[in-house]
Image (cartoon, rainbow, N blue to C red; front, side, top):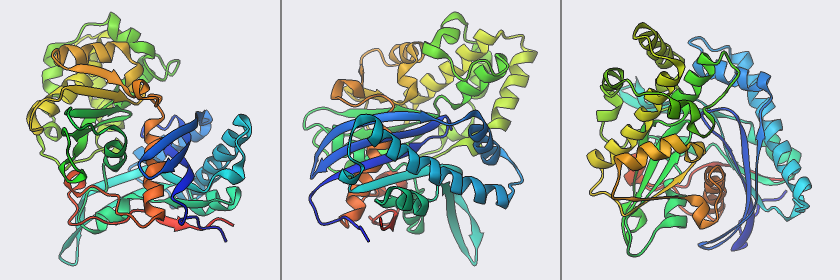
Length: 389
């Protein structure tokens, strides 16, 4: 039985499957205290059939437990295979990896909770069976990070602020690490601040609504707006944008988190219906929801942070959308906007790297939630540990 927690320096594989459900990100890093060296990173796209199943499970009002059970096992196989494949393709010995940290794939996230015996219980469900990952790879696997934070009253999200502080805090600069994945989330890092000073929350939709609109208007020929070309050709409909900005989530104070249950199929359907009545073209629709993402990110800074930062560091797929970045820079003209690539971390790699860092902390018995971000009553050690063989 292999449970690796004694060595200070460890080689860790991080796995991430985001709300866009387009594939699994795999990063292998060496972690030694606060030093992180990124060795390899790749994204393995899901087959169309698996992606369709995931999206259907996430957005179905009535969920078939047999399908959830099956896809949980399938993702465990896919995640385990992804680690093995990355090591094989990069000539990195699989046996050199000490640990795996897997976020899993979120089927449903319910931080507001429901009542049970006089208590309000938040809940969340991530699938991608870690026992299968550990068995296929032979490597100790840490997974299911969110529930422990929720057990002490937290939102179970965002979790990456621990890693963001680890990687990007600066003694003299206020920084924001801005991830634009399916959902957009920020981590505020004050100059010289400690982990207790971190502020982090989901600002609202990132690429999720943009991708869904593009997929609809192109009848599935395009899954996303490559480099923001459609949005760049379109014109923002300010009237419809104002309607979208009335969404109550944008006014809600942190701690807060959201996902496909809020900005998924129903939300997009309502937008498309309204946009068609107004006679918007496909490009105009895409431009409008792209502006929604950029504007709500900037508004979140102005509403909920102590001051605007000196620097914004972008990551996630949205960092590749030139039109989105241009819109964000227009919203924040006095702020330097850069990307994680300037720090040696690919746009799409940071989340997977973050879960490698979280797993490293877990296996060493270190508290790795950020109560100031999640609203948890206390620091706790996140995740469930499955020994390797």
